[in-house]
Figure 1 (cartoon, rainbow, N blue to C red):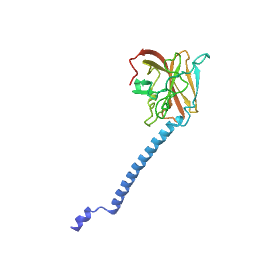
Figure 2: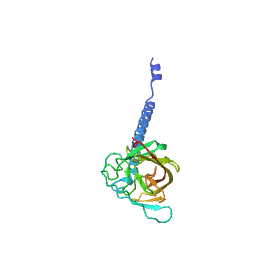
Figure 3: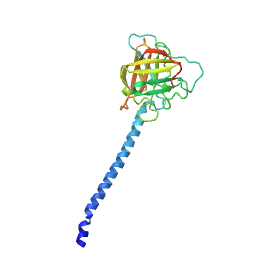
Length: 224
């Protein structure tokens, strides 16, 4: 009877090995989850670096035309009542994005809350103007432009504004270092839309998407 019990008994060395293995595996998964959470936090921080503080509000946007020097289109002068609700919508079918934008004078026109209509740009109804919108990318709830990196030349971007749908086609995509200044390369003979966001997986640059107007359609009302 004692011999049978001895055969079934697990040796102390085997028990110690199994315990050490379980502890090691548990420690690995705890460390892995911690490291992953820190990576997400770090990515969020780096993705928002370009938009911290007053960088966007004081962004020095330099418009550079395609060919010879011409007189720049003056920024939209809007003197009506300031609205804190959406005055139009940006729609990008390829990435299933539909997001409203506000009057550039609104206190809610903030990149941390919404898409940012850059002060000094032109609304879509300005002939040969340039409508400039900036947005976050990353993993936060306000990363409305997180999928912009999937866009290519030829893709369509729509803006609904003042009961009209403006259809644009992307003609140029390029990167620039995050310096607080931004050069927009566009053809001043065209009505354009410029989208700005942090570059995917690159915390040192921002990506600029230039689109040119190809069609305008009447709509019953702004998209909701």
